[in-house]
Length: 257
Image (cartoon, rainbow, N blue to C red; front, side, top):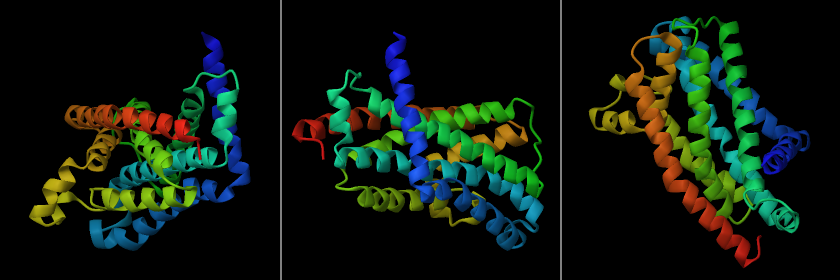
């Protein structure tokens, strides 16, 4: 019973230590979101919220969610790299459960996600962000974000399987994520947008999760937004997990890469 779990964790560790060979990936996880947070807070904070401190309270939860979405691209990128280089075929020759390589990749992604969330929270506190909500807001936020990250990862698993090479994974992934994350309430309040756009932004899963994170960190009613975030997580998993597994099995049946 525990052997498949141990094998999955071993493969997850393999994915984590690969960062040593790809320092740019580590920069995307850490430096890029920190730059977003600092630059937007001090360059646009005065124009958008009347001051950097007020805008930081609004922006930090949004940047955490935005970065969560971007990090999922590396699930697809890493999976595609394993497929195109034949690593997945070697895994299939080993006495491993068929799902272990994919599960290991996703577990590694969740560890990276947790590290990114804690890093951004730490930078936020250094810049002056302070919690207004109850003490359990942070662990509740972490659990909610990791559930949503797991669901969103299935989208990039599908992109990683159907893409021809890792470069196409990044192209398709970021091309899809930029409009989803920017047409949301990450950077500005929904009320400042045109009426026709507000409805789209309100149902955007990035907006729903951002509202839930803001509520958990700053207090106030969160039941509706947390429920909405969980419903989006279930919906993404139900739609994209079966599609991803089907596409992966089909590609492996054709000969991997």
